[in-house]
Image 1 (cartoon, rainbow, N blue to C red):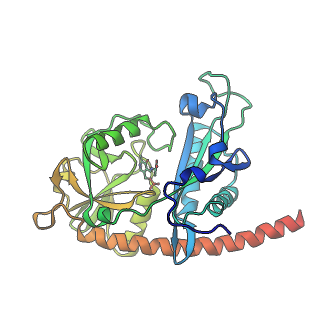
Image 2: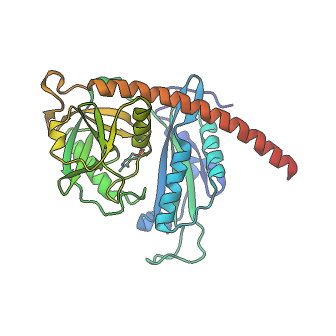
Image 3: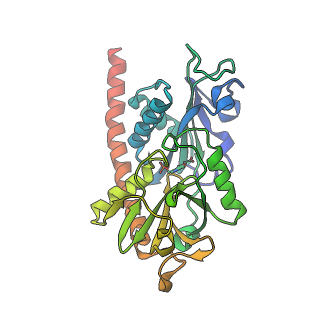
Length: 323
Ligand code: PDD
């Protein structure tokens, strides 16, 4: 059992990772310069948050992440090299092999290494990479004060529903936020909200959470889905519908969410405080409630993970005996 340590935020280079069937130090993991991930951005990925709650270190909504991975692989026609149980085993192992109580597990599959040529190469094995990094606590001032965001036209391609490693459009949009002293760029297409550069965005008005529907224009986020589920459990209405850009100006609250940032309130958008005058520029009451519920949902998910993994390790031992 690896000792759990809290102070390793700068030690990410020490991670142990999995590359094409081998466990290795991250610093020693190497892929070919001809890997199509490097040459074409021809790959897909997942990022899974791992937290330690009630002394249980567990990934959040791991099954949903591997369902989405399958969807992305199907969309780009890469055969999934592993079945879900193997992915879950790998996730459990990468967490176990690394010391951090909070981690972001990264899973990437590319079409593999081949002579540079656009068509899919025949008979090439995909490159499979699973690693993890320490995930520092979300700064309490971001939770308590919210974050600044800016808007920008969504100039990306029309397959934003695929979690592709071709992220240049998203990278440029995140840098736009940084260049403007903000924490996220909220993107707009044809007068409607799509998503953030690496987050989903929801608008809250009169106690209803409105979230753009799943489409080729945005990533079907695991966190935003989780929030919709939690809202429904607590009797809060979720309206999945196109959200007009103008609604951002009149919203009571605006939220962003992702695996890495969980749930944050947008306190200012393009320099203007978000929300009704009395509470403008501060996370609103719905945010505070949802943030608490979200932490509770993580607890429940962690307990489920442990009970499923417990059953799984017994199963694995039994199948090893049979083999
Ligand atoms: N990004 N939209 C985009 C464009 C994203 O890149 C992400 C996540 C999300 C939120 O998805 P989820 O709730 O499943 O994390 C929405 C990850 C964290 C990343 O690229 O690092």
